[in-house]
Image (tube, rainbow, N blue to C red; front, side, top):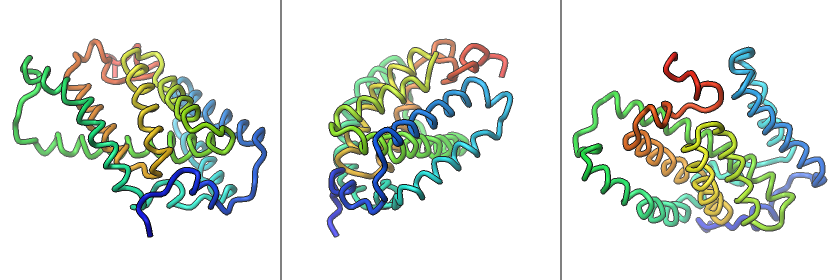
Length: 228
């Protein structure tokens, strides 16, 4: 079996029953609105509401008959994706790494156990974000938008908007979301994307002072990050 599967091939091989563009658009808007409501309101008033949102996404996969391979959750196309993502990540991350070393904000040291645990935990969170952004939202958008570039741009905008009001994260995630979505549109696999995001997030946190980054908080937490 080939390790490279185009987005058009995956969509054409999707056994799910056809859904109208209007119904799919409404589904996308409702789920995205629910995520924004959770970030801004429900995580304080209804902290377990994320379970209902996740259940809605999983039920959508069942209704659309999505397979793990079609969602990019298997090893299929992982090598092809990595061959694009990793050189791209190196070209983007290398200049700030050089800057960080020159300014002594980055040091070559053996990672401590807590740092490894933190990176692994953040990596899991990044994988979940890429699952939502790519496996769910991007896949649904591709069902109603013919242009992969336009759907990638919308994924980037949605990803950036989910990080309001943190200006730095809004810009970084919008641009990064678009680039990663462009890769996903060609090679359906989320794992190299998640790794690239995790490395980029750790690098950003290491280079920027916490008062500027607000501990990478979004939503109301951006304003009260020092109190938590």
